[in-house]
Image (cartoon, rainbow, N blue to C red; front, side, top):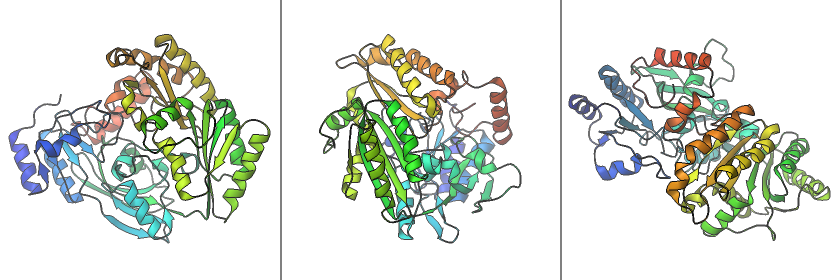
Length: 469
């Protein structure tokens, strides 16, 4: 737990922010101190609610001078606990939501950190552009959180992670100084790239206050299909075909095990199975093209060939936007559908695509040796090797017993990931959950370099002090 914040510091923060800029109301604080799965609960002496970058600079400057720790928070959709304070001042960007500028010539949108992904999508659509990060939580997830965790989503295969989509940043550094880095250049080869240090830093090197994000033209054609397959091996063979068939136009290529589909059908109202029969695994494929009709034609060729040679068992293609949304809901509700099923070991891992099948086979064996009747939900972005591998307690099992086995079981899964050349955190970050565990998988040389960077920018370690090295 962080040391208590002196009363005079709290008074100074309240004074500089004025009415509406802070809160100590327990009802106001409650939703910000609870992780949405109820795994982490936090405490804070003060919620600060800056409205401008100057407000953020004032907050951070006061805290830096006093050596008081800060936890930044966006939409509180994080899954590794990094946004939940444990006694630190809680800085929420919820009032910093402005869309500052959209420039079609530069294909850029400049937004403040508290703007939601959904708001960015809506603003881009108004000028016939799009920002290609899509998350199930996009109505709540904020730009600042997406950048600070280097979020991925379903379209990484084509567009990359958040760091690939940021042209410039504005941020308040740990000493309270404002860095104006809101460039919109595709090329700027003038030394160290400070924005890339801040992206994925989980609020440890400063507070992102605004970002210049890349925009892309709307697709003239789009095709979404849902297919039953026998195995992950078949899915990987189909991934290569999809890339060839579209010339690189694969927007998303997702895999889901039947167990996850069963949970969605059981626990999400209105969900239905698009296929008449059940299959061990499912693919969700989306193709996009700037040419009218091209995606639909490519999808038809792709599915026909897969059905002919037996890689695809059955498939359906969305004929309307509503049908496409219903198919995507099966994927996006994989995690929410687990919430009522009891204790879960969550893994957000990445391995090389060539190692996905090995990972799934060996991870299943590891888990079954520990919990023979565990219900395993594997799903994710097979196109980039990111698998969400969730291990639920046996049906009728005891939550406490399953949770007690989590650390030992997850350690074995993560050791397997490391042996396969992978990462124990593909897109969620390290947060409070994985920071210490990550030391097991990073070399002393790498950790020393990371610590040196942090010490240089935040010598008092006031920014999200429980997170990263």
